[in-house]
Image (cartoon, rainbow, N blue to C red; front, side, top):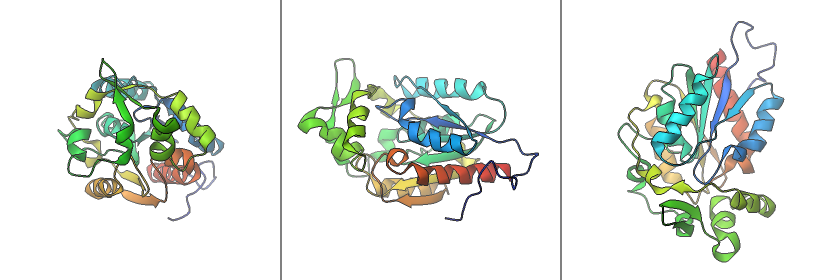
Length: 248
């Protein structure tokens, strides 16, 4: 990857309005999942907004993300992690969104769902540690002392942090994975994709296929499913590259 200029540098054209980075979390998470990455971007002078989606349905999550986008002035770089990629695929159609960044995320085609997109690939090992309650909300189980998180969702994250991830997980309704996007913003907007080659929640081969499908600029990291936590500097670099593209 080519070096990315600091967004606070005088090399940036003064007339170009700096984009706001809007971060969209995945299933079982909330906006706090982005805390390390947010700090790194803010140190570079980037304005960051982390959306808090309800995870009650894909439709609800898209609507919540759109409300966040509509409150902002100026251009946006929209970033989605995991299931959050499905959300940004449709919400990214908003006029102020100028670039999309998928972080180990679902880049869906129009009319497709997460489950439909993943069906032709072997089930990832992490889904052996997902359970549903009587209302259809999914959580990661306590099996084998947090194995669902420590060995599958974030196996390359420090144990102390995985305990926090488990404790703060946000139940996600199973129907969210069957929700279909009505439009695919990546067909008209430039995209970047971070492939996690050690991912145990979304097959790396599927990630690569989706990145190729959307003609994204690809960065591959030796990371688990949460590279924004385990390798935040590398993910920040990709986002800064998208910002540089928007402001050039």
